[in-house]
Image (tube, rainbow, N blue to C red; front, side, top):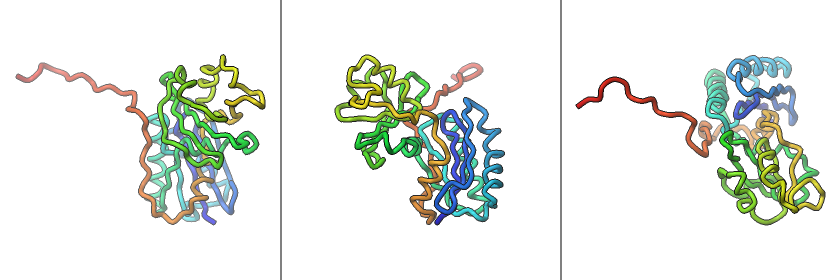
Length: 236
């Protein structure tokens, strides 16, 4: 069994977790809109100490690669790569969608197709569909909540993730959407940001042979930045 340190700073939380012996040995999770850069390294030290491990005891590092906030993704990836370089460890990337999908309670699925929604912070939602076994059933996409009724399509669906409240509001007037047991579209209790507990567990399930390429951030749209205007007089 592999020993994994999992990290997440992709959205509005900061978390670290150690997977050892087939279970989570230590974990920390804090919701925060900002400040992950200052909190992550102390949090890593806390979970490693709680698990009684040194970095040399790890087999693998795992980190969320997105989608998520541009700065948050860079914080997690930079920390994972720095530890991997110093300790000579492989790093595995886990998508935010996959981490959120694993957090959904088994009793809620009941054969439904899962729609994982990440709050895009631009009045939109980033979504990916998963089959009943939590395997991806389609590519990620950017969805305007106003267009959710048509974009989600037919079938029995369960919507989860921190973007689910936006879709719930968009579907509030639909008679086939809600919390009643027979509703075609239901909403999961799993609505908080991704947790490193699930990042570590997913990476452990894949094994730690180190054959993967270094993880890269998954962006579904360009970052919220603008090129600064040129200064001075234009050249002739």
